[in-house]
Image (cartoon, rainbow, N blue to C red; front, side):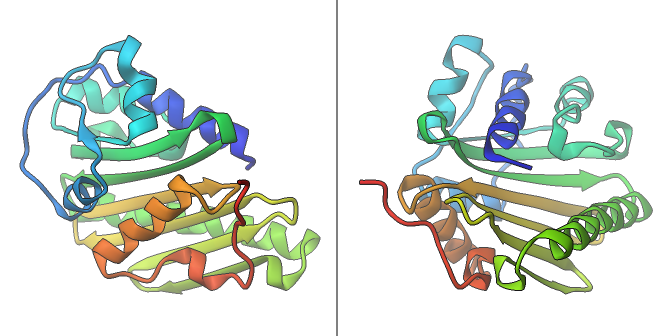
Length: 215
């Protein structure tokens, strides 16, 4: 999936933030994004969405109607809103360079739904890995996995890099972290800093090559 489509997916997710404005307290992702000076989106205003994304933003909601709307995002395809008790989303978009970094944290009502959704996401990335094996050199993509995560990094050879990770944070919570970058500037730097704040290995470390500066 190319950056333009990924960017569109991120913007679509942002555009449906008809948010309820409830406060749920901080979590590790919120804290990591606060360290990057990302600002909480306190209420929805369509005119301000892009501005928030350009500067970095995050939001958490328990509202069932809002969760249902947000689950229409491409990245959450297959997630059943009725199974979620809360949804956290945060990220940053550089529209000029077709770059983005986004994180979702999904809290499920029961363990079975969380586990099944995690397995579905992993199967999707494994299928993508099989396609890469047919068309790309083995150094162009790498994967890493364990019982509670699956990570993938991809270099398309034309200056675009894509990074994915699905994480089983606990028995009822899974997270999706995605970045698409074309340079080593703000979005890429903050994506790596986000992982440093989590004290977690960043998928970008799996590839030999990395984005270079456009300056």
